[in-house]
Image (cartoon, rainbow, N blue to C red; front, side, top):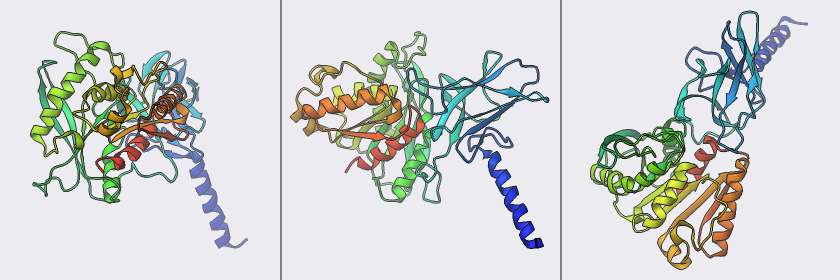
Length: 386
């Protein structure tokens, strides 16, 4: 065998060995090698705990719904140096919450970045989807995500809303913009759509491709308790649910209209949300169609008793009037969300039968996780304000 061919075979073997080991996930902290994404989409976790007796990887999952990482917990195996490891089967692409169970104690993985989920900072791992890049940062003009503080009399506290302003917002001071109010899910906060959802990159890429109209996107925390009330950790708890509607209508929207160059009318105002945020969206918008003309429900929690005549205080009872007022009612879910998908599909069918104009979008293979909601926004945003 000649030296050139020998070198080529050695290089190929080294490359194959390197690929077989995988590469650190994009969600892995700087300098860490694990969690690693393997070529087949499986994920390898490693954690050093020499004195631990049992270590497991516990994927996060919504109640009654599967996790994109598979059904855990996954037992890790310890080596002679006290390093625990496990490779879990190929998962659904996207961002997944998880934590470690160290002798039963829930701990974050020091090798991973965290995001606010499950009412706390929680480890996340990003599994890439081959050929899908609409939510990745690209060499296109970028908008800004600004923090706007406003005081809520209803809660007696300052609140931070995050506002996406599209490219050119500051250089076009005469231009006014429509507004999308975008709501997060249970156990998360106002940062979720940016940190986990990559909303700003999705919008940047849509705008660069001239697929969407320039708009402001406002993200506010979906929990709101009156002074002296202990915050509830339950998704959409009653106290928070009763407060979030007037807070949104009477405090958040006026604060945005007063401090940003908005087109402050119903024809240029939309709201959408995921999971708990989709339930809040319907609760806020449907009784207030004088304020909103565009509505999106991403993975609305399962509703088994939906009725077009009585649900949501009869908002759908007069189909002709509803169709005249609402420019878009968008419903969508991942096909792997099971109960949620089936419930929302049933709602769509009943609305169709009643003559209520709506759009139902199925997202193949995705679960009750961020890949579903990234794809939902990617489909929903281009339909707005046309």
